[in-house]
Length: 195
Image (cartoon, rainbow, N blue to C red; front, side, top):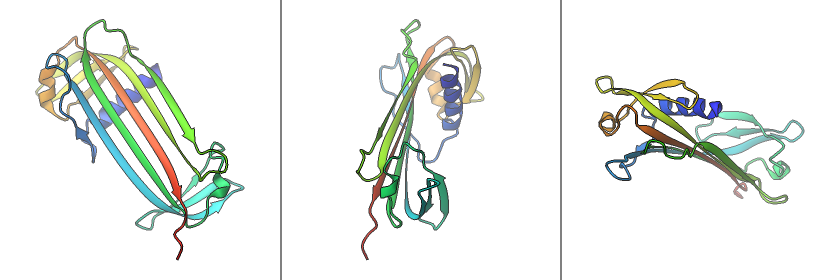
């Protein structure tokens, strides 16, 4: 549980810095129980430049010509089907939902993950998703600085700057927050285009 809270603490601080491409959805739920959702999606496409099957290394070339060599783990069982020139697309999604819940609400804290990979013989690819939920208590609100301090399940404190300071009017010291983090990654490979 400590890892989840540390991850949440870092995630809260990162998202509060107004990450590019992030959106804040309108508060969902009632005015008594506000909810804020932050989302970010990124898509990257690269071309396979080189493959070392023995060392399980793949060199990718990005759209601006930048090259990156990555180590591919044994879970990518269809690596031998990858060819130079193939187009690799990586889609990444992350979201954070923060909801004020009634004190004493049964803790939805925990985490779950799922991994799907291509079947043997299929084109390389796969997806992974992880959802982590933690409960935190608001211990301080500084409207002038635009920050709030949260106490996690292990007793640790994290102070985060609110991207939208108006949201601080919707919470008070003692409120319990349910913070849900979702990450999803999908990798697909398309064959090289014939010239």
